[in-house]
Image (cartoon, rainbow, N blue to C red; front, side, top):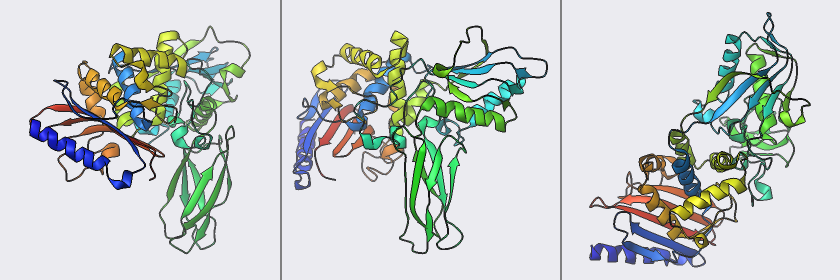
Length: 446
C-alpha cells in the first residue's frame, strides 16, 4: 500500500499548495478506521473554525446518548372541564418536549399537518370551543433563544431562527412573491402558512426587465414586522423567501390557535406563553401526547441538509435530559463528556454551539477523525453513516464529486461559513478499506 499512500500524499500536498489558496490555512487528516494507520496529516492538531462540521459532534453525541429510536413528546392538556356542548371551560396547554420535527420538512411540505391532526384529536374528544387561551409551556429549555456567538446580522434569517422547547416549522416562515399582471404593478406577497403573527410591510414592484429580480426581506431583531423591498420580472415564476419570526413559543401557539379556528375549533382567548399567565394548571387532564419520528430520521436532514435548528434543539435537549433544564451550557457538558469518553483531548476543540453557526467554534481535524472512528465502533454507526450526504447523490454533496471515484462512495458532512470550508466523513478504498478523513480551510477569500 506504500505506493498508493505516497501518491495520495503527493496529490493532497499539491492541492493544498495551489496558489489560489495562498492566504488559506489548511488542516487535514486521513486515517484507516480499522487499523489506525495515518495516511495523510497536515496541521491536524491545529484549531480551525469547522462551520457545520460541528453538527457531526452534536449529532454523534445525541445519537449515542439517546439512541436511534428516541422520540420527542409534546403533551396537550385541558385546563378545565368540558361541558355537554363541547366547550372547554379553560385553556388548552401545550407542553413542549423539544421536538424539532413539527414542520413541513417532516410533513411532506405541509407545515400545518400536525396542528390539523391535533384539531382532529380535539374533535374526537368532543371539544368544539375553547373558552380560554392556547397556552405554550416552553420551560424544558431556558429562555436564551439564539446561539452563543451568532452574528447580529444573522438574526431574522431562517438559518439563524430562534430556538425553544416549542418550535414550529424550524422557526421559519415562508414568503411567496408572485409578479403582478402588468409592468409597474405591485407583486403579490403571501405568507405560508398564512398567519397574523408577522406583519409584512413595504412593496415589491413588477418590472419588464428580466434582469430586474432583486427581492429582499428584513426583520429587525426582537420585532415581528418584516420589510419587503425590491423588484421582480413580470415573466418570472414565483419567488420564495424565508424569515424567522421572533419568539418561537408565541409563534407556535399563534399558528396553532389559527389552525384550530380554521378547522372548526373556536378559541375565545389568545395565544400566550405560560410564563405570562396568572394561576396554574396543576389539575389538567392530558388529552393526547404527540410523538415525533425517531432520531434516526431526524439525523438525515441534520447532516444531509445541514439544518441548524435541528442541531441546536438536540444540544439543548441533551442538557434537559441530564439536568431537567435544556440550555447550551447544560447540553455542552453532555457533549464534551462524550468526547472525553471517546479519547478526544479537550484542547483539540472549542464547542460553542450545536450547529457550527458561531464563529467561536474550533475543531482540530484530528479530533473529527477520532470522533468518526469512535462512532464507527458503536451500535449506532449504520444510522450515523446512512444519514451523511453521499457524494454526487444527495444533500449538500449532490452536485459535488460527480464523475469521480468518490461519487456514490464518499459520505461526508460539509461546512460553510464566510472564509471557512470543511468536509469530514468516510470514503472506502478500492480494496474495501474504510477511511475517515477531515479537511478544513480557514482564512481565505471566496
